View 1 (cartoon, rainbow, N blue to C red):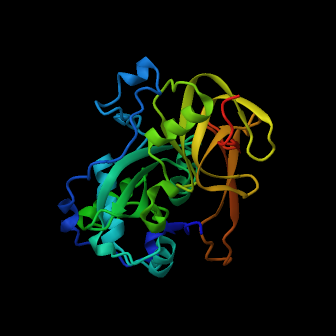
View 2: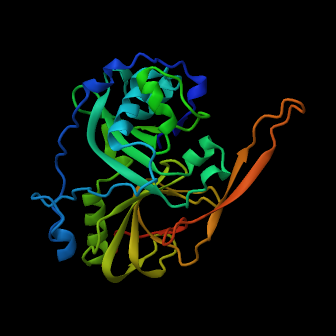
View 3: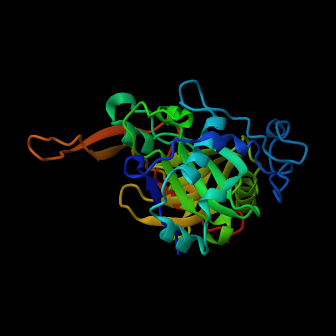
Length: 324
């Protein structure tokens, strides 16, 4: 069963503002069992790997791209775990396949920055809607024994929440601060692969070297979440559904749905290529501020362009077919 999506709207939750305990998780556990990808990348990429052949993940948000730092994102992830009332507890535990003790969750694994495939609409969208379509910090929360429980998406536009960490009220309209996923049976790979595993899968089906460090990209929260992997030369692969032959230098490894039709393409990480025909952007629909005089809440739309080189329409690849 695919995990249930949980967008957290903080106004409907009881908040705990006594957050002195947030500093208790100062470190993040070491990452284990990652593949050595030094033989799968070009020389320019290899020199940036760690001594164990892993990506150093030195990529940082561009100036103005994130309102919070990585450290603040981790504090807010713990705030979500321990500082709110979890109205979705029964659903979370059903999707996870066991009990979740939110008070004992701790940071574990790596922290990723996921860029939105859309350009920043700025003040043209209400803050809660802008957060949904914006960039995200992504991390994992584990139980005390180290088993992954929650994949936590923390909006990079959560600057208004920082006062909460000091016991003060937020500074902006709230909503869509977190996008969290219960991890099925503690198997993180069913929701998100490491960049090393994403590279290994792309190299395995193309036979080509990876020519740049993977970039994590997101659409509409962290539901559409994928590693963008670029190879040295175009490779031919087979479409999973139609069997058509496709050629691409860019591959995406993650979970996808068709934003235009709403069709779920893959609830677990899969390999895809950008479709030849892409839309220039997406219409974001939202309900406007409640009109007290009329009792209506009008619907509005805004067209938001894609970032250069980004894709929202993808074609799943048949990973069982050897390089063509």
